[in-house]
Image (cartoon, rainbow, N blue to C red; front, side):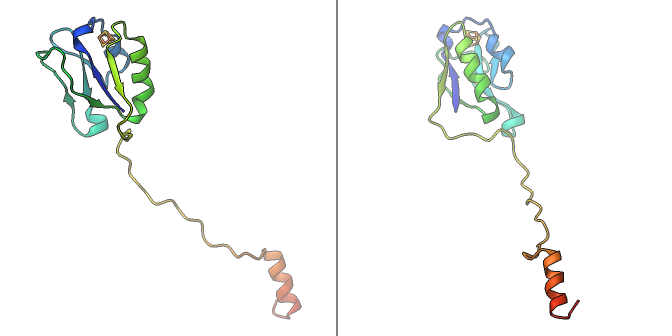
Length: 125
Ligand code: SF4
């Protein structure tokens, strides 16, 4: 998912930045813009940070863990100016340290009790 703000119609109320601070940012001109936060992308990028580009059209990627919050912010935006693009492939929430799953030790398919009886019948127990 990606998100951007139609800054021409942003009221500057700041609801989005208060609710999803990792995605929305209030620029110096008092209007919201979008950002990609270091915690999710390794480095922070604020789009249109100086607020000098009315109608700024850059899109920020949204981490999977924040998609619902961004959708809620868009639904609650008084300017209805938070635009969402769901055509982008999912962005991982955080880098994941992949550790191989611990594998249990191999088990005999024959229960111990039965194996013991078989050995006893064969005279090996
Ligand atoms: S909630 Fe909407 S209108 Fe308010 S600052 Fe954010 S983008 Fe602008």
